[in-house]
Length: 431
Image 1: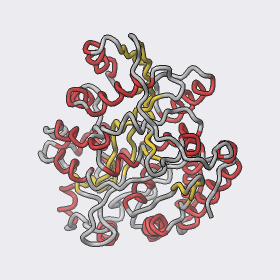
Image 2: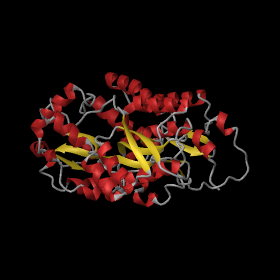
Image 3: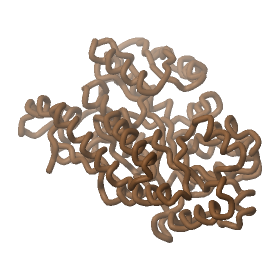
């Protein structure tokens, strides 16, 4: 039988103590509302009010009101505060890395039964981001951030290098480029962006958190992550990869001036490049991330969010119905693309994107390549204290980049900080 919601939600000593060893009932779909209801949805997707207007016109008994949020950590903290106070919105946009924190706080509902039919609409990797344990589902995937390699096609030709198919080839290309022009780097390692590193670790097969019974397993310093850290740390120490953080004025200038030739990033990259490197329009292209072994075909995620239903919503069935429509219905997916400018998580959503972004007009198959790459993104389970882990990343990797020291020690500090915080918070940790 499926582990009960209480144990999956917190996996903490204080909550797990209330779980008996008796068999648990399998969740069943919540009942439909008896009459008209009004739902509140907290989201930061642009033009969501226009999307919701289409739903409201077709579903007069379930009216959805949009409350625009800023997004990021502040939005997550605001939702947790509202949930604790007993007045959360019915629906909330939840970044994948924050969803386990919402579950641990008993702030979002178990939607396993309500989403059973929707599972087939998503790839295995993206579905794993909204699942805890073996089968407990807490949200509908909304948008995703599959990672790929952005590269300057013209400068690759200039320096006589091929698009690297393996990370070993990437390292060799970095040495070639920097040797030919010491002012140019193939890429940079950003110690300010843990989401990027997390996606690269996912690609290598990392699983930082997992659930064992009613306990958490934490393995941030696993072999896959250490391999990724050692690779990038070696290139930074060697001086053939820059240590300039992403999204800084200096990084923007290097992109625009052709001093950086690649960026391992996510599907939302075109917007960043068009804003920060306008002189290079039409010169960038995408390819799959280099692989760790020849013949492999995998990627990871950087970014993306889901639609969750508040545990204390009095209209869970209605909210789940809207969340399912928003993230699986063809009309809704088309609206998310056209009005919300998001890359839908649903598999069929990619087919709605046919014309390449204007910045990538020289690569007409841009979205077809994205769809193929997206299908290879590995699944991943986030833990209940991602913010602690990410802060430890910044502290440890900042120092490592500054000292041009190995990165493995920084990964070890992430592991130590994460475990210490979870134990302090009362979570059961498996040996």
